[in-house]
Image (cartoon, rainbow, N blue to C red; front, side, top):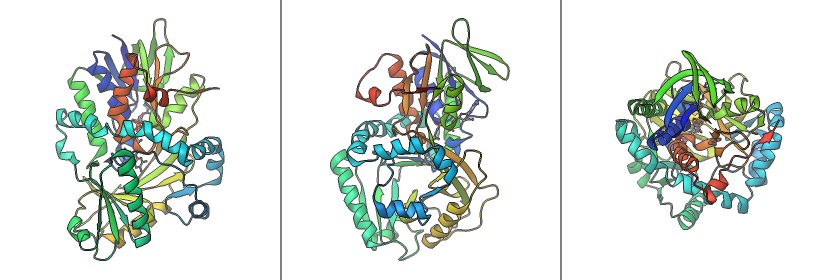
Length: 412
Ligand SMILES: Cc1cc2nc3c(=O)[nH]c(=O)nc-3n(C[C@H](O)[C@H](O)[C@H](O)COP(=O)(O)OP(=O)(O)OC[C@H]3O[C@@H](n4cnc5c(N)ncnc54)[C@H](O)[C@@H]3O)c2cc1C
């Protein structure tokens, strides 16, 4: 059995640590901060079984014009950052063409289709049941046209992937969601199988605690110090050098930084998202996507969390609260929202790859080096699942899914 060092203790690294440990490997989880402090903390907390197809860049001219002009709240872009990411964005756009996107969806659906089954034993064993709701995800539409298009999409998802949903409109809306203002919404697509979490960072930490209780080591240290030693890999922990035969890079949005030091180029599209948190008189029953306004709202441990769509900006760029402000205003049209919670605003970056599927597997040409990154919009959903996939790849599994998620890196 190997001695693994997992770099990065977000949902992806923690999921990999648990899966490798379950197969008998000795595993150390290393992060510069506490597990679940970054992207796996700030997200919308949806375990998204409805996301069987990865997020595509729309290709119709009206939507692209709305993006370009800033009318849409889904995407906010800045010229310099967009230009820097242009080659990766061009490939992402290429993969968004319907035929290619459906082919990618076949692999993605196999991953997403396992997500709740892979979370379930971890939720139970880590004693996290109180954090989880199994009430689905609602997509809200404010007019008949949007709702009818969404109903057609839901019918295709049912036909292509067997994905269940319910269409709710009229009087049914108040029964399904008592917090909705009367008449504010025309209809809802209720994806009944999705789960959600009241505190995604706490769930990630609970999984890390489970890993430690099962004998794993959780340490602090600096991933960028990774180097090859005489017999394997070494990295600097705060309490000394850590050695392992194998290393998994699971640094989410920071994965390209370490790969660059090792001589590899991983083109990544960093889609920044924000959350704001607010007091509310009534909790909502499940997370809701307000489709026309590009945000998700969900009742969480610290109030109503509103998460925004994508901002294409520099990773170090200062916060720009334009999308969050618009989202907060739009959410207030749907439900009653109170004051902002102190220190409630956060931002992080979705680590998206042009191929849309996370890269999971061996880094070519580097013995004992593995990658598990690029989970984009669905890393909180997929962490346990890609952890299992990685553990199976380590054991020699090879099939269409491992091919779709294979590590393909340029040389610097
Ligand atoms: C606004 C928003 C909403 C989202 N909503 C959802 C959702 O509802 N459902 C869903 O499935 N996904 C969602 N996502 C996506 C999801 O949050 C990410 O895909 C996922 O969290 C990525 O997990 P990760 O473990 O790869 O990265 P992270 O959670 O960021 O973990 C990376 C870890 O690496 C560590 N690290 C970085 N550099 C170093 C270093 N040099 N040394 C040591 N440690 C280091 C960090 O401290 C961090 O803990 C959302 C994302 C955003 C931004």
